[in-house]
Length: 299
Image (cartoon, rainbow, N blue to C red; front, side, top):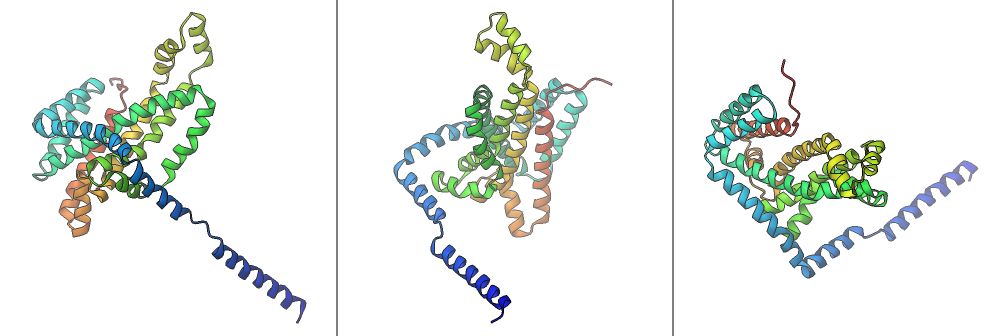
């Protein structure tokens, strides 16, 4: 045997043994997670019911209101809000888009209002959780370093991965779909609130403290107003992520426009796919522009 053959034999045997070692000592992480999920479902199911109940109440109330109110009232309300936040051109454009969307098919408006209710519910929950956590992270470096990897995981894990444990813990339907949406859309709200408060000049905070402001007064009167652009950017991103996730949540019977899109894909129904896609586009445009609340300077 030549030296080259000897080296090749040793090299091959090393990798064979390495493969055998990996096969023998594989880490059963998936099985551990499965056991943990099943244990939690069997032993603390009451906690998941407690989480689900307020979300269900908020979602049902919002959806009921949007479904009961006549379509033209919703159109006028959106137009009035756009006029207050933007200008009359944007107001007229938004009302025209909503009327156009409503004229596409009979049931499209109803599905669109369900989607809007899910988005609003998810965004409200994200704001309630995200702004306090962002403020806490901005005030405490240890909290920020602890929260950051959690937010990284929430943003990098594929949305489909959320659906399985959410469906296992909370069942299927609109509420579990909204919970998955909250998980997916929460990170920008926390990150940009944290970033906005950290970017407030230290001199401004020190000046407020020098004038006798308490910590809460400084936060309320100085830091939050100056961090408002970053917080609103986080709100804008949360809205957009909520819309995308609500459509994906149709895979666990989330309802809304996602249900139409999923059904049209399964049936290869091009007209229904076109109509539902346009409805998602209209909602995305309106939510995106309304969440950018700075008024444009008149020409």
